[in-house]
Length: 388
Image (cartoon, rainbow, N blue to C red):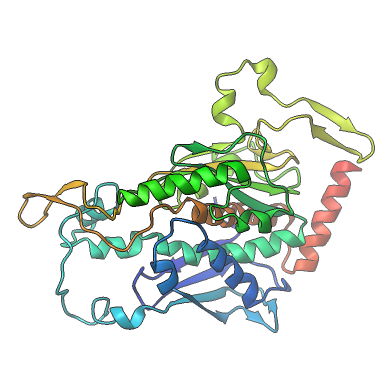
């Protein structure tokens, strides 16, 4: 399936910077550097992040595709510079040479060993620099453009943390489209103020032991029209596209659409969402949303809801994970890079951008148009036909 929108990232965690090129955005989308830098700043939020969040500042440069605050219809190129680059110029130099400090004790749970074996590499840094979650800064840059695009179509995306380690937020505390700022004010990006304090304590306890915590974030898109995705082909189903995009986020090991796990244990008579006609709005709606806004691989007009489950980070502050030195083949413990105690709050922000990417791509596939004015006209005409 050819993608309507495409993006490609390049760069390493401790390299000079990350670059992302976004192709397929229509001309005339009003966007500023602040729209992107504000999303990058949100990615750095969350109690439990390590000191590298203060050191590795995001230095944003718009290299092309935007002029006088509007997209040109050509590829948009964004550079996210690394303020720590001067400390790494020798270690990460592209010139011929070798490292003075080879990393030969791969970390369990990370890409280190599998990547070394796959690509025939002799030390872990050649893998970890690209496998690092630092790469998501480039994705957030691309996703920020998509969020601005979707906003023009009346779609807003929010996320919040629903689980951190063993602590689970109470059911029913779900932010609305205007609550993103309130979520971000929480130190763990949890919309449930009572559970928030428990989450902070769980992080403190793990940090004291030099350990890490995983968890889950829920991401919700409001205002999504009916008709994105398709039931016709396996690779056009909107829930499949969302699952792949969200699962691609570093350390995410499970994705749930709607109440997917819960409804697996229910009878069909209570698992599905009754359809009613809303005469006032002149449209159909569902009385519940167990399906998470997707039926048969097509958005149905209800909020699109997904949850991402993140494993604990594999780099620990206390080296307790057993491994093997790839040179001596002797038992050892995994090496330590700067790390966080948890990255679940930030993962939610990345999940917003990946959901935005999928919805923006499918919206362009559905409505088409080379300019924003054309896309909006097509979308309005479609909705009139669907609900008229």
